[in-house]
Amino acid sequence: MFQELTDKLDTIFKKLRGHGKLTEKNIDASLRAVRRALLEADVNYKVVKEFIENIKAKAFGQKVLKSITPGQQIVKIIHDELINILGKSDVPLSFAHIPPTVIMLIGLQGSGKTTLAGKLGYLLKKQGRNPALVAADVRRPAAIEQLKIVGQSIQLPVIIGDSKNPVKICKEAIAFCRKQGNDVVIFDTAGRLHVDEALMQEIAEIEKATQPNEILFVADGMTGQDAVNTATAFLKQLDFSGIVLTKMDGDARGGAAISIRAVTGKPIKFIGVGEKMEALEHFYPDRMASRILGMGDVVTLVEKAQAAMEEKEAIQLEKKLRRQEFTLEDFFIQLQQIKKMGPLDQLLSMIPGLNPKALTGIQVDNNSLIKIEAMINSMTADERRRPQIIDGSRRRRIAKGSGTTVQDLNRLLKQFNMMQRMFKNMGKMKFKGFPGLQF
Figure (cartoon, rainbow, N blue to C red):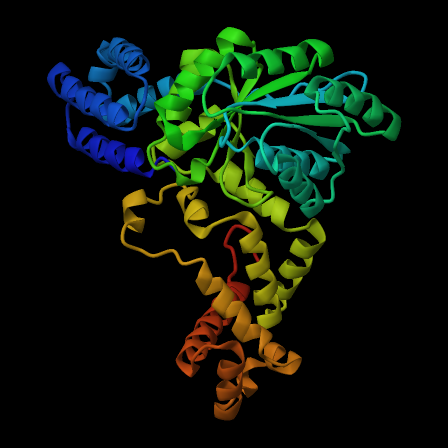
């Protein structure tokens, strides 16, 4: 996500910081490079023009030019302006005072509405709500069946009406959910390959009949300016309340995310960052600006870790580390938690201070985790608890059972031994400020 843009901006910022003294000439040259990088990232040209003009107005002030760290000052100005473009602050979903809350998803065919209905339902369920999905797309072949499969995978009810009239289906679904105690209703409406009168008429009728609390425009983030243009066309016909950008994990440029808020005036509420049901993130402008500028996103990283690990599990792990009892069984459990947090390359990109270019050429292979799991699964319970008993014959058996090689297993055991030594050394550490206190 944003990898191409982040790399280009990082190169520009390095040159800026390298100047002992900034002048209007070298600031202007840097901003021309920023403008070029944004345009190449498919950011709307009007948005780029306003963005650069706002930075110039602040960057050419005497405070910046005479600053001790002028390069850092310029980067901060760019960071602040980027937050302004992205929306200043996050805008959460609006919930009805009297349930059910009605959420209507709109957008073109192929933008990911049906999958998003499941992801949003899954997220709200984790937050303690009781959502239901409504199959309001009666036009696309297999749309209803797809939503049923999505609902089954996350154990959420899917309401399918007898009628071919989507307006009637949605009205009846609200009444049904009110009786059943579902406090959120999510409409998966029909899309088209392009904006047409029939599509707009249909969603306008649903909106008028059901008065949704949220109308979310779903856009494919990989389509760049096409997503922005489509959002503008929809907005002329229907005043939606927010935007969801899907498939952002596959978008290395990020033009849609940077442009769409500024052009439409509507907040981005969520972004899709993967195919799994849990791969949906709340959109925070300040965190996203930091990611784009290669500053990491430690808050989201911590939130992902908290969501993946229960508090009791964390306490138990801490006790084992203190007692130096970390085993391959514990290591296996931690691998499961890491997998829940998302792809490794995404997690690494959130670490502050880690230069994105440092990862260039490094293959972050998520399949390597599967190989490690297979090797640990091929061990006996005793071997996991006491890996020192794994001799030559045991190694051959484990490698054969896991479909790996003895060399792979040797590498795993060596890395695990290094981890154990590290934890042992941490246990011996004493902190000067707190005599007697040990890890």
